[in-house]
Amino acid sequence: MKHYLKLGMTLILSALITACACSSCAPAPNLEEMMSKPQADFFSRIKSLCGKTFIGTTVYPDDPNHNFAGKKLVATIEQCNDRVIRIPFSVGEDKSRTWVLVATHQGLLFKHDHRHEDGTPDRITNYGGHAAEYKGQPVTATKQFFHADEFTSNLIPDAKTNVWMLEYKPETKELIYYLERHAEPRYKAVLKMVN
Image (spheres, rainbow, N blue to C red):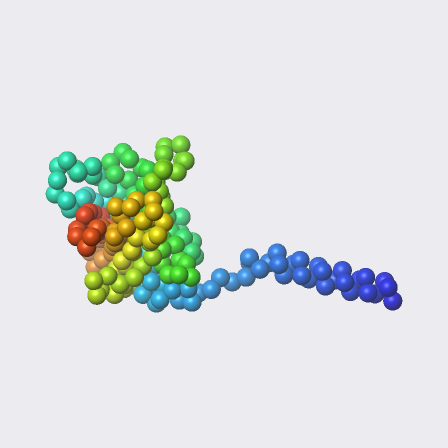
């Protein structure tokens, strides 16, 4: 009898350990279970462009003294999985920036990952925020507005009113990155798909 009890307890314990170990292997929730349909559709649309490269220029501000003025801008959609899309964004020879889209249970998250040449994080990195409507405009399957989160406000106090916009125009194959601060235009880049 003791042998059967011991065997039974061993089997139950093995089953629990297996269940706990495999809980991370369980199917992840669908994107639409984590966020609104327009956010999920936008994430899926950008993910469908994985491997595509976009090249463009700064269109605002029209200031020859701006850091990005006259520099070739390149964004490549890569490292795409079911929850994270990384988009390295280079400005001329500067390859320190990566845009990151993350599917979260709080909605679609957009972050800026800044790194030094050796791969270590810059002091100013990981800023951004979650998607939400802006100035009465809803988020859509092709356009999202990302409002500065608390982390960003603490990291860069001047950026607490930042709203970033990412847009993909299928008809022209353009990727648009736009930033407003205090509800006023601050920066805009337009990049066109090249492959």
